[in-house]
Image 1 (tube, each protein chain N blue to C red):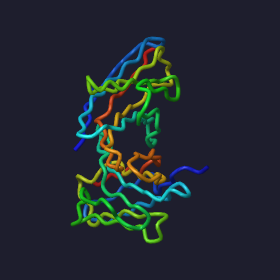
Image 2 (image 1 turned 30 degrees about the horizontal axis):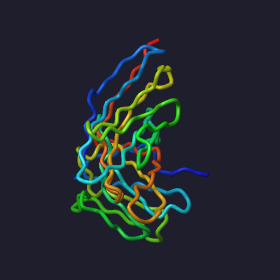
Image 3 (image 1 turned 90 degrees about the horizontal axis):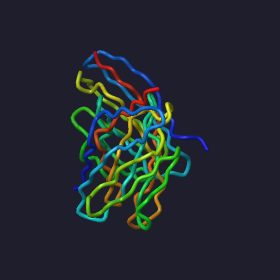
Image 4 (image 1 turned 180 degrees about the horizontal axis):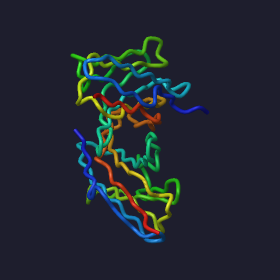
Length: 117
Length: 112
């Protein structure tokens, strides 16, 4: 079974430029997460999708960040314009909803390492 | 809301020595607890998880963790460290509604 796929793996841009990250979750996983991991810290949730619906985007800086998951499969996270403080690793994860109160195991992709100069 | 505190941002052990990585959590509901490992330039990989039932949980690569409700702890242990265990380890807590919070991580160094 293929894991979570992310691209690109690395991205270097100048501040004020736009950037986009792509994620393809594990087949059959209907929940998709985007996390940001700053250096020396744990991942922090940006947005969570259940199928194509964003069910938790409370931590997404909506002035410059946007995300979409149009067909409920792969997803794109965009930053426009990028700022120096956006330098981080952006992780995508997916899980399969099992219903009820149960924390599904999240499977993580390798991440996209963003450097904003 | 739940939260996690990992005691010690860096832990160094000798090869063959006991590994102990500490994690304390805070949760207003019965927690689900996880340990993930992250190797350089890779995503997070699940080591083990506690949901319900037996409080001693065994995971991959010889790791185990024990859920202690009275101490609000979920420490990760391995009897004998191997060089390949060197990585960053993250403890996480969830309320069971897909709201997972991660600790800041502990970097494990294994000395030959």
